[in-house]
Image (cartoon, rainbow, N blue to C red; front, side, top):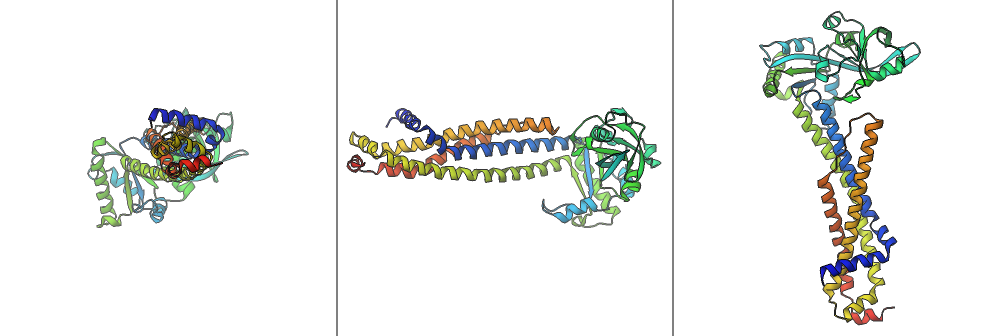
Length: 416
């Protein structure tokens, strides 16, 4: 049978029962749409997180207390990283010495916690971030109004605070905030600066946060004497690996650790974090796509059932074609072409719907959530989905097609 004639005849047969054809491919359309949507949003989420990490600069090394996690499910290590007290003033001083870590030009402490701020009758739950003025260079956040706190504020444990844009709106509305006094927990803090609207960036939502000298945050708000993180800034990106090695040696000597497996701290570079995030988001996206792909199997079974019904309905047609010279191979090819064409059309429709929905959702997230969520069209997933859809038509169409090809022309012509 001529392939061109077979395709033309297949389209004609599918057009005879348009409603049934549409319902038949619905499972394929839903499956492919879901896969494209999941892959697109998954890539968007990964790009967003990676951009936030990269926003810290390639020369930043993150230190956290607690042993390095052995896996993503190592909850004990994660808890140590949050609650551990292995990083204190002496660690920061040791890492700041050139004879210990020659390639580190600055060490910045980070402490944080959730607190309630109030002004008159207005209250707002926010994150308080304690550090030094050097944090502005790492995260590239500078006050839009007022000033940032200084080293003298850190040394004197001054009760001064720089608030995010949303914090300012929630507490002061349209009124000026700089110079006013707010209460954080039970302590009075003078607002010295307001950050511009920045949104979620570098893993911290600065709009919903406030920053103060780390000494003040430690003593007056959190009641701790350790740091949750230290950020070491390297003089040159090429020296990052050497700096990491020097940091580990310095901290091990300070903590009398001889076995690296017993480290009570962990060190991460930007490359490490990018690799971890890519792995996690990749696995999660693949898992969700696999779940969505189940509907393709359901759609394939539906196609097989409809094709079997079609074989029964067209028994006389099959008998007539065989009577005028069509072979069993011709009949087999005809029904396989119809099944494959059905699923391929469903695949194309699914790709279009998935891409459209992905674009609209990305647009909505960017507009309403204030996140820089970019749209990404997964070309590889689209091609794979189209191939899988065609394969499903071929696989699930074989049995009905074989049933049709084996019919006796005499018996088929007698069929009522």
